[in-house]
Length: 232
Image (cartoon, rainbow, N blue to C red):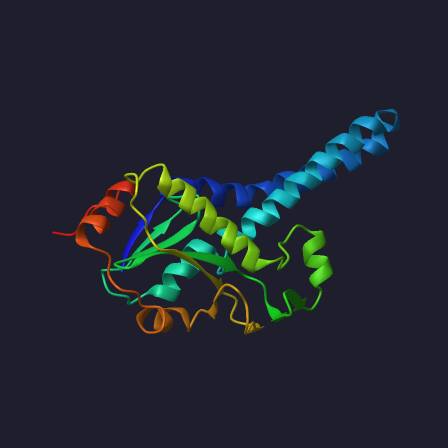
């Protein structure tokens, strides 16, 4: 598999995910101390503490996606490692963070990193996780509606393509959901978007998810729209 990564974007967001919680903590501690020394500045203290709390939330959000062993830009290539060179993974190159290009079209990979027990039934997702409420309070992402969010990313990618492809050229685009946490247990039969864990996605792409190849001229137009260099 070929890998094309927006390294500068990942580097900047990783750095922010590392330092934002520290800035937030420093602001909260500093203003709490100042409140004891200068009680008359309580209004300023509350404002700065709120800013510090927001920094902490931003840091938790970015940290969950870009920092540590579950960093999305590391786990998605890991899940696809070993695919043939006809597959090309675009990382933060389009409105959808992870897009897999294959001879039959595009696949948006929507990533979820939650642990615990997750189910999809009758149009609703449910998530059972130890201390889940506390994790969400400190800014870690909840499960949400991954099917809807995956489809929104797919629609964003389709709009992106329409602006760059010649008129009348249609590229098949689909979405999948990938759970990357090793302790995630997912039961999502009936989900409108296919759901996979780390060990399942690659096999599906090679078998059930394999699509007829696009005409060579259409594939070349797709490569040009996505700024992908064709292999010699």
